[in-house]
Image (cartoon, rainbow, N blue to C red; front, side, top):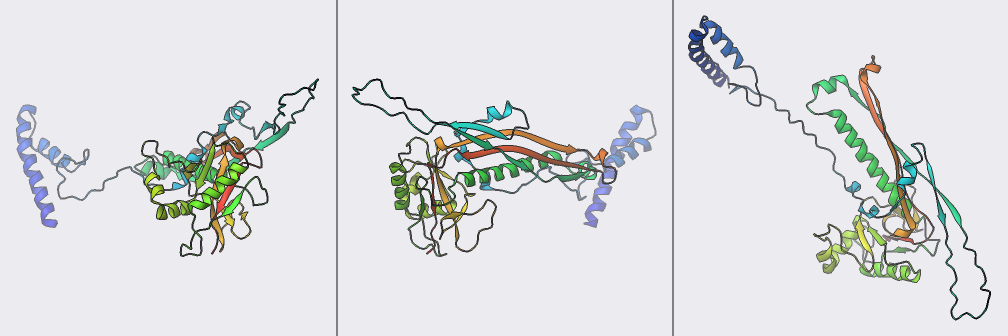
Length: 354
């Protein structure tokens, strides 16, 4: 490598002498002036390759940033759900609660009535206050030294990571809120899988389990339109392993969605909640699952779920306001909700323990 470097310097000197002598006459200056200038310039990096830097090691800064991959952002099961964001945004950025009115009784229909006057029937109203969740990220410090030294826009990258983190938390909180708390309500069926042991002490999901859920939904007269089944990754893999028809229709390359199954619009999400499989009780949001706790697939009717996004605020303090540390701080606050409106029209299929 030393020999190559010496040869490179000698070549640069020869080029400088040849070009410098040629420039000296028209410029009416001593030949040593352009020769010296040209020789020095060849060792100053210019653009991506310099002029004659062959044999000299250089570092290339791409400016590209690789971030953590996560399927937890994929939450298409929320698409199309009734959106009340307009009510939140019109009330100001401090609005924390919206109110819905539920009228759960249908008027009675008389057939071939002969009695008059027709009796009155009052349709009761119920106020449903729905609080928005508040999501806040922890502040990220960015020093001025980093801003000047790095080859990429760190503030923009950090903003993107904060947004991604909030979305992941929001989607996980959404499916957790939709899932029934336990099996005590007959209007929200909670079933257990009945398949074979997958080798870990968990019973696989089988088609018969989804049919059982369909029968429960039919008996509750839940409308076919708007039935959604969000399968966890364990249950998706169970079906792919055993059922060739499901495998063939698993992904619709035209729509980009999983094919429908037994009146359910099927979605896949890896952030579904855990249940105590023995007691059929949902774990608290953020709780760490223990032995015997299993993930569940979640069913819901779109008529029983609403969503709303409130304001998003970015908080940013500049380094010039922090002379001791000379660092910038950035974090975000976002208000949002995805919640069921009534205690019916939802359900779950939990992986049973062997």
